Image 1 (cartoon, rainbow, N blue to C red):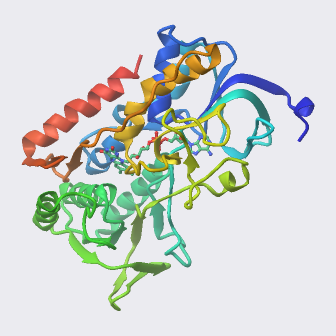
Image 2 (cartoon, rainbow, N blue to C red):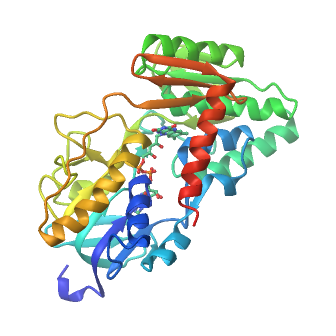
Length: 373
Ligand SMILES: Cc1cc2nc3c(=O)[nH]c(=O)nc-3n(C[C@H](O)[C@H](O)[C@H](O)COP(=O)(O)OP(=O)(O)OC[C@H]3O[C@@H](n4cnc5c(N)ncnc54)[C@H](O)[C@@H]3O)c2cc1C
């Protein structure tokens, strides 16, 4: 594509309304970053906050309490919001392609597009499968399933993915239907064991919470076809709904972008979160990969890099020194466990109970309030 054919040229393109970009929007609103020539591209006006998604499924929150209005934030910031998805990037030519067919040129670009769910273990998804991402579609699919399950008083659920998101959603789904007076079975499939990336004491507490709610956990690799889920030990499960929270993968379109990627297709960045190959392009959150600094795909890192990204985008333009993002060694994780209980994990420390849920609830609501104008 010839740059002269491009209809629009932006000084700064923010692609994705992820956690870190919220801090960039905040910096623009507060006048710390100029608004001229800036646009945000995201497929939806609403950015659901993943930390509250299980609480929404469990029935503790309404949808309006768990989402951020990106359009309102852009309006406040005085920047353009483009409701669309990027589907191609020519980094050498500084050209971004959108699903609608539009092509945008840019001087600086920042990617905060999260990751996609790895569905390589499913042969024929049919209408049994719902993926946790994108979250607005997940919520609509979940609502349709739970309405039908309530009406028919039946519905077997299998959650595939034993990370924090999988265990939280399995317990939330079970709690939601129990609240309506049904005891519908929920099974969790965790290929490496439940919350395998967490310390043993946290794993034990989470396992106890799953038992308390009668969520049966299987260890093993799943293969699915329609509503049939097969484990590598031969176990077969029949599901009316399969919820996939099975690992993070990078979008395929990045493969043809000229950007330097890691083996899994995530964007390699330096300590300032600039692309290792294209210094005018930044990547933060799940989509970024720091060579030599493996990071868990987690909202916590994406939140913490946000203010540093805001600083670096301006500093790079002005020729000022950039700030290094140093991920914390110990990160606080609060894993919700269905009915207003949660397990906390911070380095070697852990705790669980109702008070941990209320603590998480306060933190999550404060995050939404911060970006709600
Ligand atoms: C149920 C659940 C619970 C979780 N709980 C926690 C938790 O308690 N703590 C924690 O640290 N982590 C948690 N996580 C993980 C966390 O959600 C992710 O690590 C985090 O959201 C990544 O943030 P991000 O900024 O990279 O992108 P995201 O927050 O995923 O945002 C990506 C944005 O990019 C947009 N987008 C996607 N594709 C495109 C495209 N092609 N073009 C334009 N825009 C695009 C999306 O619409 C979205 O606005 C949880 C995940 C799930 C699923």
